[in-house]
Length: 420
Length: 95
Image 1 (tube, chains in turn brown, orange):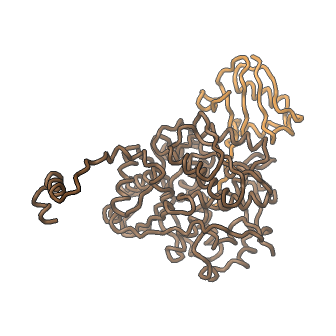
Image 2 (image 1 turned 90 degrees about the vertical axis):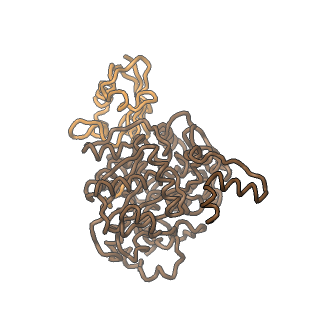
Image 3 (image 1 turned 180 degrees about the vertical axis):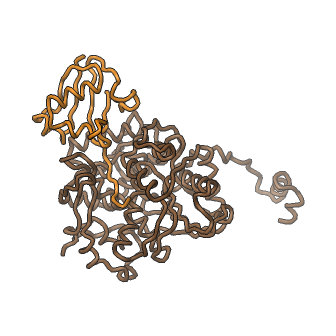
């Protein structure tokens, strides 16, 4: 049986199936589509034992992804470390704390490389020559990098006020960048209209069902790296709200295939207080979230009208988890904490996730003996401007030993200097 | 108040192919009601069983999401554009 007969798009609301087409919503009822698999057939070809012969990157789970038979991976995406925390775990009073570190995801240093991996496989399948996205930065980086490698033209749409590093990290690959005067939600709306009119593969618009499947590999890796076990808790940053639901889908699939034992996993969502429609909805018990105008340094999470927000809220509630948010000061402090304790330099979104984890521990929602995984999704080198003022330039000294001794004396005191 | 409603491609099979519909209305709600009376096939795609605007349909008045303008009761001015844009979600059944 060929791999592309194992899955197709299905409407989440009415259940109608659509085969495989570049479309994100059901044309009958206009609800979201997602990739649905024939798990009985997948089970026949996918074997956990076979994985040991494959390289440790996202393509090792190819039978669980919407790829075609002739798909040939060209880039080793994912396969990031699951770091068992020592110092931070001690500081937070946890016995089993892990950090899933997609700050070092290749090729563009965020988890978005994973979703672009599956989206461009779909773009190739559907014959698109131009690919693009609406982006808060990381996705644009990932699209530009992989489009360059695979020979697509890339055109990405970003809010005009994005961090300079994220713009540069897209431009360098030769992608066309269209800056929009507006926030991400304006950009996203425009892209929905563009996908409606042009025959382009916009990865998070008309290719979205295929794109979001790539996120599952973050979840598969967590389970495999825990020794084919599910954690008790995961803490995940929420922008559009897709990643958290795809990690849940990944865990559920592994249970369905019998690769891990079933157990309850609590899903905790993290947002910045300056853009927290999902956590606000959870905390206030709203039936529907209320959209917000973003105002936060965590610009990669600054989506005020999160498309997958309803699903994320449902997951958080039904899993027994919770959602929280932290302010800009807490985000900066948490970036520094993660760097100082674990040697991981994350972008603002990672600061949000770490800060929220600390808050959840304080609320006793995450308990010391439980196994907790915190998803770090992007690299700190992309958002250096958010913390630059924390580290003012230090004075320079002459290249002489006396000058260094004077420096030590002035900064750490003579006694300490003698000891050093 | 003469206003224009912009129809996404996916909805046009209910509007005889028309990409925009001109009508007269004083609020967004009134414009939507006029639209769905003229094209009854659209009704169930605009509102759910409880009469609320469907969760996965975003409605904009000119550049702004109507939820920032007080919802569908917000007033229209002559020449306003009302945009219907299906939400681009890809949620998971894993939840």
